[in-house]
Length: 51
Image 1 (cartoon, helix red, strand yellow):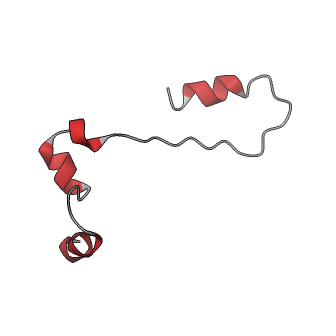
Image 2: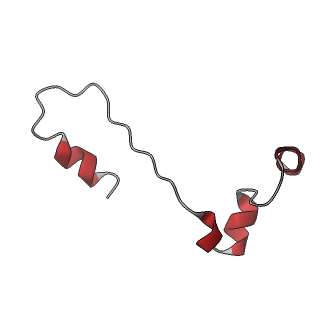
């Protein structure tokens, strides 16, 4: 969807300089390993220390 929709929407354009797509996801509904991977529940300093 993130690849197809922008391409389709720009199909009628004569000139396109740039296409930007952003994805936002609520991690609270994801698996615990994913939440740990992205540092959910950690402060910035705790996250930086774990890197």
